[in-house]
Image (cartoon, rainbow, N blue to C red):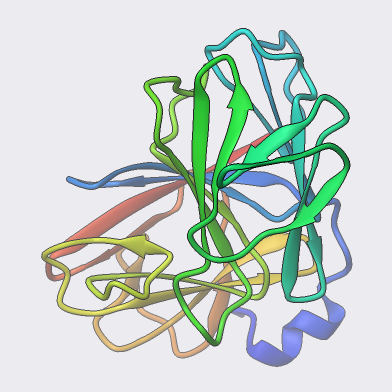
Length: 210
């Protein structure tokens, strides 16, 4: 039997794990369910909730922390938000540009006014050691689709796909025209490593990491 929305209550609380979405003709995206997301330089051991950039940064250069429906940036080494140096923590606004030092810059986005999930975009040429075109800091929902207010903008898609975060896991809200591993369901379904989500004009693969 496939899980329904009522299954969330009995699914148990798992330790949040990061996921990758390999979206055909769009890119690869890290989705983190962790409350705190660390950003740093190369690290031989990566855990969920952190990303290593190919840059001369400490392994814990900065952290993005979810606080309710807002986000704070923390850095003991200091970070520049916009044009202002911040030494401890600072509330992030949509569109804020973060300078982490050594020429590394990111943009913080909260594209959907009804969703507290956020997106980190890489502005400088520094890229993650493990490929990612952007990072989604997920809280509640993540929208993939053609709209500019989607967390992952996918040009050419004819519909929006909704992902849900529950008990430390990633779930798919089944809609008309959406198939999971070639099958359609009428409920929300927990996503597992290797799952394929597709429709008439889109397709992506889910990988669980960490």
